[in-house]
Image (cartoon, rainbow, N blue to C red; front, side, top):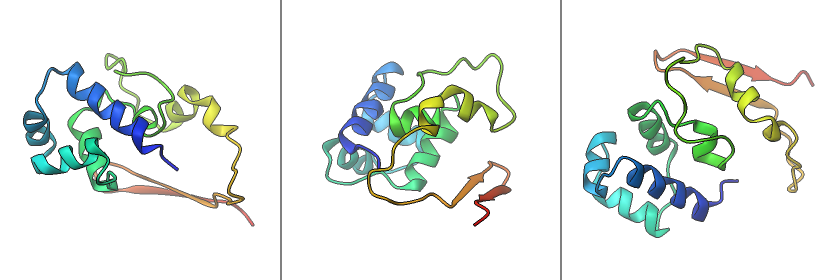
Length: 124
């Protein structure tokens, strides 16, 4: 589960890093200004669509960092990664996270910008 308070802090860090107003940031990621305000204030949680728009508008933002705070911001964009292997190598602690809710992840789907996807499931 995402810690919303910490997510909001990372979102504010992104806005401040680029020296943008909330309005300018909302225009850049193509969402309403009120969406930014509601997420930062904690009124609303970010949707998957919102997170996708942030990542698409700013490819130097690491998805894992945005969601969990693990990794760094901004990413070094001089050598863009073309595979998903960098997600594991940049975030080894995610592999060893203890699940306190006794839930098991049995499926991971990675969506690419071209509309394709990869589906990984456990062999149970």
